[in-house]
Image 1 (cartoon, rainbow, N blue to C red):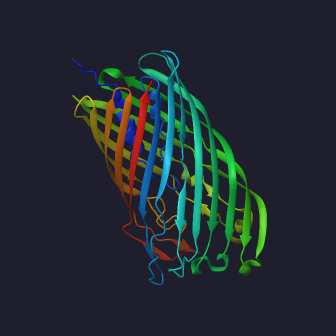
Image 2: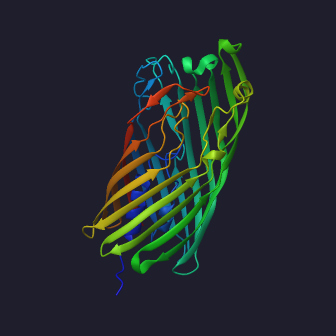
Image 3: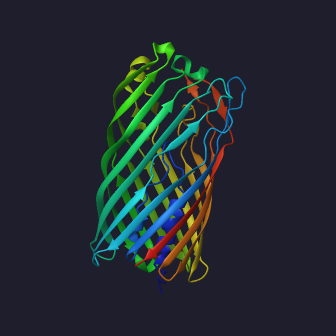
Length: 373
């Protein structure tokens, strides 16, 4: 006879998925998960993650760069409403894209180079269950994004001192997907598509003296945050044991940031990625008591771009995570931590390797507080 696993395991698995993806491909800070939509009642959740980053390298002159990526925090917010037995809705708020890089004056090749990208997204989803097994969901997404970039040091050549400011701009997109569930064994497979989001942002470029400056040029920059596909799954594999995972693909090869003046002078984008990026995660959760569930995860991300830019000296990862979920009546608390071993990268400028970044890592801790109502 098949054993029905506790429904709150769905939330436990989803919590672990989110916590193990605090650092993902290229500029990503989350996997844009929608697991909250599958809660079995009205539910609200607030999350906060702290990420400690250890990224440093050695430039071509043999000078250590020091730590170039400061620690940061980010939050999530979600509310799910069960409107009828067949209809449900969710509102999800996260910070899907972001990066902070800041080189000190220690390295002559990179001195003063810095970049910061911030974003916030709100996604509203409506789900319809055709029967106990099949459902469809879709809804709009509003995303805000802004960025600042400074190039510095000998590696930037005549562009040392170049600055770019992208004003905060709003972009519109959508998410849509389908799911299959078999509640008797806690099986769920969900396929979710997130559309690309286009921007026409007001920009300010400041040219250094070597390029005829100082001069300020204002224009618009057209770029897109990439489309992506998530395949989430979970299933009971033994009494009190749940297997869950994620396969995520992001169309980063279609991304380019090409400020008008910079690209006219160089013939190249300021930022871009040569390949799409895929991430794979697998986890196991075990229910110790009716209140407490423990879980562990392993994740792997494709190599991004070994010979990339000093603005993003990371190149994929392998990670390990641990977490716990505690349920007490309507209250759910989850705490998780992940360690990410980052792959080596060799930044390039003008087709010349300018440094080496080796054996870097980051550690992420996430706390979530949820309430059923």
